Length: 76
Image (cartoon, rainbow, N blue to C red; front, side, top):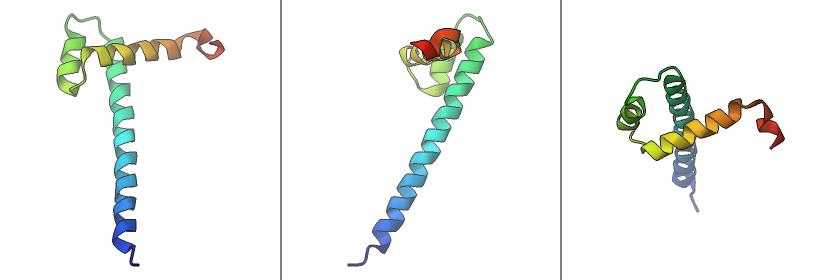
């Protein structure tokens, strides 16, 4: 049984998953940085429009970022 093509496809898939995870992490960090740096009206809606994420997803990201910044976050 020749699994060369299967192995190559599996490697490509794992690389693509890793790239997607990194891109998602980078995008999340940029969203958090932008929204923490502004209180401009409509900023969250603009981020939602540009990222394709829902406003609820963005609120969840911001809640998680706020929880990570709390000094007692490790104790919970």
